[in-house]
Every structure is written in C-alpha cells, then in structure tokens.
Length: 553
Image 1 (tube, helix red, strand yellow):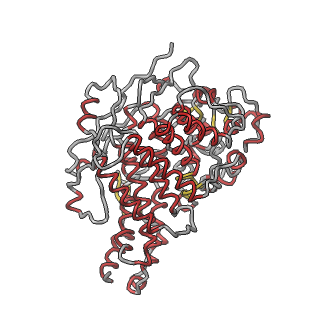
Image 2: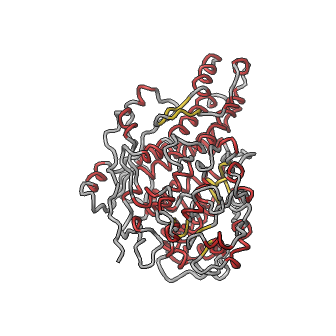
Image 3: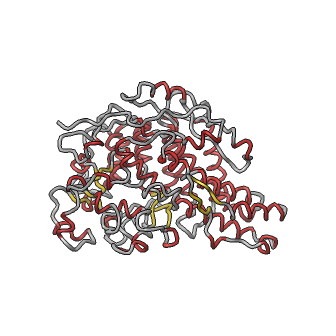
C-alpha cells in the first residue's frame, strides 16, 4: 500500500465528520488522532486500532439529539421491544403522565413516516458505523498482520446489515387504517436496504438500489465466512471485539430469520426447515466455542452489578464510559434503570407486560427483580438499591429492575450511566437452537431442550401443554427483555399482540389486539436518504397509526 494512499485515508477517516439532521458529530474519538510522521513510518496498526475503537464509540453516541432516546445502538433495540409489547410502562398507573416513556412512538405506532425523526434515527444509527467498518477493511485487507482487524470489522458489518435486513424487509401485516398498506408491501416485497461496502464510490452511492433478501444475506454470509477464517485463533482482550463464537452466533441469527420464509424468492439461500437446521447447527457451534455459560441467579439479581457489567455468558458487549456520556438523559440507564433516580425510568416505570408476569412461574428467579402488584418492600428489599419503602411503593406495578445503574450509583449520572450492555449472550444461542430444532425435529425435541435450559431459571419448571414455539418465544422475551431481540422473532413468526385485556397495564393509546404482526415492525427508509440516493425507487409503506387502539370498556 502506498504511503500517500494511507495518508489520504487518514485525513478522510480520522478527520471525518458526519452531518445528520443538522447535528455535527465526530466519527472517531479525539484521542485517536494519528500524526503524519506515524503514518509515514508505516504504523498502520496504530491507525487500525484507532479506527476500530470508533465503531463501539459510535454505537454509543447520539445521532442528532432529536430526542432523549437518542443514545445509540441500544436505543433502537428499546424501540423494538416497546413495539413488540414485551415492555409496558406503568408510571401512568400511579398518576404520572404516560409521556415519561420516551419510546411512546413504538408503543402507539406513531411517527414512523419516511419524513420522521424516528426513521432517520434508526437509519443513521447503522450506516455511519458501516462506514467505519469499510474504512478498516479497506486499510487493513492488504496487510497480513492486520487480518484480525478485518475479521472484527466484517463481523460488526454483518451485525449491522443483519439488523437492517430484518427491520426494513416488509412482511405482510394488517393495517386497517391504511388501505394501501398491503399493496405497498407487495411492491417492496423481498427488498431490504442498499449495500455500501469498501469498494463503493460516491457516484455509485447516489444510485444504489435496495438489495434483495438474497443479495444482502449472501453479502452477510460472505462477511461471516471471511471473519470465520480471520478470527479462528483470535483471543479478544476487550468485550467489544467479537470472537469466533460471535461469528457463529451471527450465522445462527441469520439462518433463524431465513427459516421464516418459504416463498422461493431467495433462490440460492436456504429457507424453512433447511435454514432452521443451519440455525441449530451454528447456535450449537457458538455454544461449544464459547463454552456454554449461562448467567446465574446471583448475576441476574445482584443489585449492584446485574446487567451493567460483564457476566459469565456475555459473548459480546458495548462498554459505556464517562467519555461517551453527554448528560443525565441521553443514556440507556436513564430510561431502563428504575433505580437511576436522575432519569425517566423512576417516572415511567419500565415494566413487564402484565400478562407475561402472570404467566411466569413464581419459582422462576427472574421474577424476583419485578415488582408485582402485591410485592411488598420487605420481600423486594434484597433485590433493590432502594432503602425507602415510600420510594419503592411509588413505582408502578410490574416494574422490572433487571438493568441496574452502574456500580449501584443512583445519583451521579456519570458513574451510573457508564454501563456495559450486551450485544450477544450465550443464552440466545440456546433459544435459537431449541426453536430451530422444534421446527425441524418436532415438539418433543424442542420440549427437551427448553426444559433443560429452563432448569437454569426455575428448578420447578414444567413446560405447559401448549404450542412449544409459543412457549419458547415467551421465555425468550422474558430472558431478553430490554435487549432488543424479540421483535425479530415475532415479526418472522407473524405473531399477534394483545394489550387490550381487562386490567391491562398498557395505557389507553397502546392497547391493541391483532391477528398477526404489527405494521410498524417494519421501518421506512428516511426521506433524507431517498432524496440523495436515487437508486431507491420503492420505499416501504408508512405504518404510522395503522391501527386504532382498543377503547376501554
């Protein structure tokens, strides 16, 4: 590689800024500045390391500051979990305004149009990070000693495109308030998002069409295949750097999604049970390669460290530091940690769906960190940082204390918000395996795997006599509440939602009852992108307010 090319790339990459919705933010941390002397001296690894740090840093950064939910990658997951109705917010049940839940758009199905800030928020939480991956791949591919950097970047890129493919491919959904919705889905059938890689030039980017499902999954699998080779012997020193087990985990996620199709549109790609069999195979590879750890009751319920610090089963994570915290509200803990006294969570009371709480066994230790309707302060005291009974009673029923403020700090938002958040846990692989095996081998085989796993959560667990896949998805929703995974499964399986039962803990504007998936589980490509990229000829239909909420009786 010529020195002048390296130097040019350093200027473009490390000095780059991204303008999004009128807000300018640096793509990489200031401390990653590389001098011309270093580059001319051939210190490519220093530059590669700096670029690599920019990916998790960017994933923890706001896009535009449009809303206090704009705190990076995990904010998209929170929107998706609210849309999937596994998260309710029950502050309204204590007399507080429902609007303290800043993810209300996902609860209500509001503001999903192409010209909305939410559409831009989702889109630009991904493509700037893809740009960072591309920069690393372009810089490091010719250098054999930097092969592992390419493998890491391609693993991240596969993560990003897999998320985008699942969020932006439109699947049929009822939309009573939008008669043209079905026709819009048909028009955009099997289309995902444009692929931007390290070879794409600016002119081509301006006329870059949406990739088909086949095209984008072939691209994802090519990245994973290359990463598998490059990371075969890689030992990570940081939770932000993916390993071979993570590569297998992403394979498992991808094949699980493809298992939901039988339309023949993908040609070369496996679908249906063929894809489910591959999902089970790669989930088992991920489990065996990682070592199979499952979080213990102590790790799950510890008031100081639970879900803010690396745990035994975490395969991949983002580490929030004081350097990436803007203020007390642009952070995960402010919205999802009820004990973080400075944020929205004490006011919104992020909670389990009440039906899920009732369905969950009383002997399941995950229920210990949920304030039930009849839970006393004395019962809950071992599982909370709260010392005052009146403060505890002020939380709405079903509030889930799963995510703790960092170090048990409740007041200092710089400390409390500096949490480590999971990107992949080994438990997910067990759930992928058990569901995929159920599809391929039948209920008995899936029942055996589910029962085996649930012994780690409830020593008295008995699998109910019901649809095994439904029970698997229910337990997976409890397991990964707040981690942004379950909407993909519900969308793939065309699962209905019901938040309008008598005594519901969902506020009036978020009470729906459907026969299948919700329309707003598919996002629109933002208008700002379609105006620049003329290759996007067809957008997804606008799902905003596709349903009216069910009126109280």
